[in-house]
Image (cartoon, rainbow over all chains, first blue to last red; front, side, top):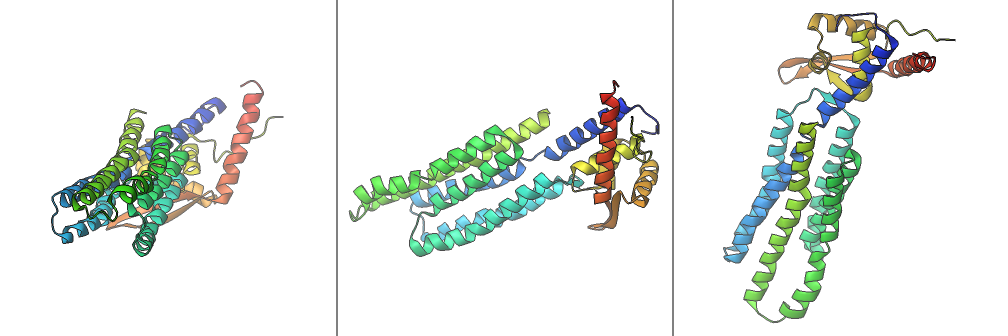
Length: 211
Length: 96
């Protein structure tokens, strides 16, 4: 690129191709944060399912905190390895939104604990909102759909609570049924996270690599 | 009447730099070199010219222990780029 004189048409072509190439490069691996959080959450959830199903000591439930403890360093590592050399407004908007959502999970946790509300339902709703907004910003249909599906799926938890727990288990002293109910809830949570994060993460990375 | 094209932007490498910077918040020197395919020396000279014209802002810092030069477009640069594109449109509209 040493020339100084070129035609107006070439000039317009150059502007278009530079903007296009730069956008393509910055979009690369945009599904990686979804994969990091998605796989860690699914793995920890499956582990917790076994903790519940096998009736291991209660202390093992603290392993839920492995999600943020493993997630943040894994994210930092993934971001560092994908240093792109440039920042755009889209990246900044999406990462700011996820920071806010990530921080709000702390308050959601406190609210759920104080009011004995379903933490699974609230977390799925919050992360579903994040996935849907990311899809809208990136103009990616599959991400939008996965986010919207997750938001709708957050209703599964209160519905199960109303139709199964309240009707059949609450007050029955049936420990086996209560354990089965709770462990199934964990599996549903893991399945929703798989659809909400792992699936769009792979689709996003595949599409940006293919371009 | 055809508008005159800004001679500072009507140069392949300088226009490439401005086109990249208009679509991002900031970009480092390595990114610009890889995207434009220019040599480090030539890129450095053109960045200097754009900076002197007030079209871009150049910040020198560190990424860990490595030195890092980051460029971003200024408001004046955005205005000049828009004007340049408008002028180009007038050429293309006249049968180019």
